[in-house]
Image (cartoon, rainbow, N blue to C red; front, top):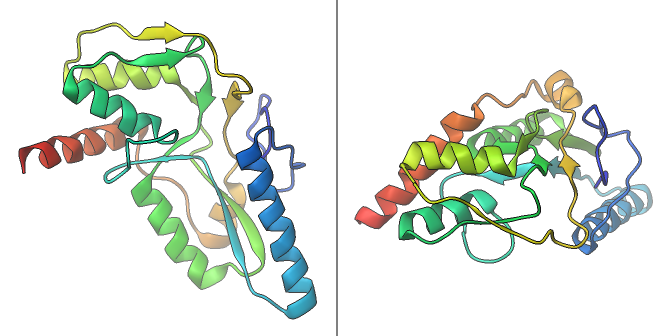
Length: 189
């Protein structure tokens, strides 16, 4: 939604600057919601999520780098990292996202909230943490960068804390451990 993030995570009041078709569609949807609220009295709530990860995440397709890496690790396949791996993302655990949604149902009407951790972790850090948790010994394979990929994306969540009484509580490594455990238990059944 915000495009390249600078030194500080952007709040909801930062200008929208989507730099992908996906981001443009999210922004367009928000504009439509505002229109329908003003014209027809529609009540809405928008969450702008960081990179959500956790148990039950689908490793197929484009999204879900955590699940993709875990699935590849579990199958012994190589891990591909596009670019230099220093792209920064705000990885937020799905359990924290669920809590935000429940709080939003109680307190959020016709507003927008960022839902993340306010912390940026690199793809290299993600790979290193998962390798340490699983005992994966292979090196990552670096591929050419993806066209248009953001280098830094993380979110200011002060508004969610103030209005919803919400903040992320699951530490990045703790969330990764829980996610790896889920994928392992799925293989055992």
